[in-house]
Length: 100
Image (cartoon, rainbow, N blue to C red; front, side, top):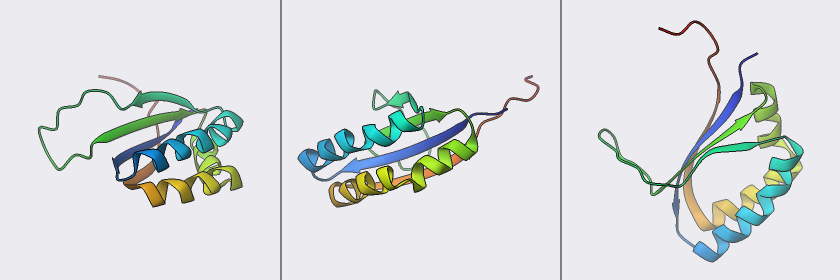
């Protein structure tokens, strides 16, 4: 079964408020078995318009990734994020088919 992923691109507008979000989201991420694949770090953007912070979070499957987003725990954390940043977030199913 293919894993599920959150891919987020974030510009933090209030660092202190964003830290409150980071603390709050930990509860939802623990509950749904989230694992950070990318959490900030260096980036190069040869195409398109990047945001300052990029995050990729892995879940056991797509349904779990969606359930985490809609959970009361994450929705409470999300309210903190929205007040402290501008973000784009997608939830996407991974690929586990044949590779070249």
